[in-house]
Image 1 (cartoon, rainbow, N blue to C red):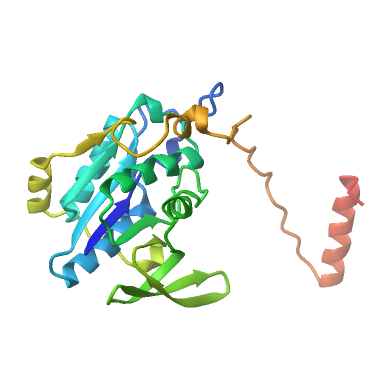
Image 2: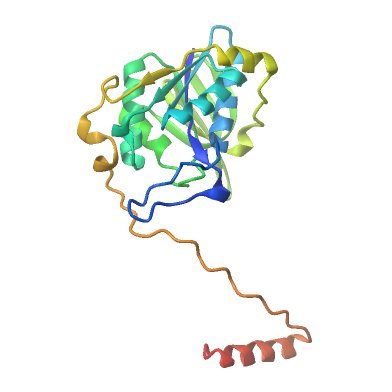
Length: 262
């Protein structure tokens, strides 16, 4: 079995900055981490690899050269190969252009049985790229996977998380699954894994190496436009009202009248 895992290096959410002119993330000088949901996706792939001899795991990421750090972390945890999609032509991409680019790389790889991705990236919270990749490739998908119940005979049975319950879904391979944090607990890098990862070569592809059209990538192919980004003003201090229910209700009405809400 050959498994592909789509991962992303994201800025630490406490330090996200937006370029006011372009609406894109400012990454220079900002601490970056492996996207948490993608870490769960990687762990799910590695668990299948551990249980099935001959299974390989390849991680794919799109980003600047520094994104290779996240890929090395994946290799240190047990992934076999890594592909970095890096080019100025990919810069400023929204989810539509990003999914086109990653799908183009997967089409070049061609031979795969299963694709994992995180539910969403913490820098955008759109949860769109995974499903869009599946649509580009024309393969079935299950999102919000919180448990893999069975994986054999070219079919998977998974438990899909819902707000008020869950679904049990059987799906044929090749397919794409997006992982939520409840799926597993990601493993740590081992000393041996770190040492071996440092010696592994990361394949780097640009727009000429993948199956994609020039007008389907990058900022010029991104229909999403950010007109304004800002930090909301902090909420004012709350008020604790004590007394009987009748007294409290009267106090609430009084305060609302002062603010001309009633």
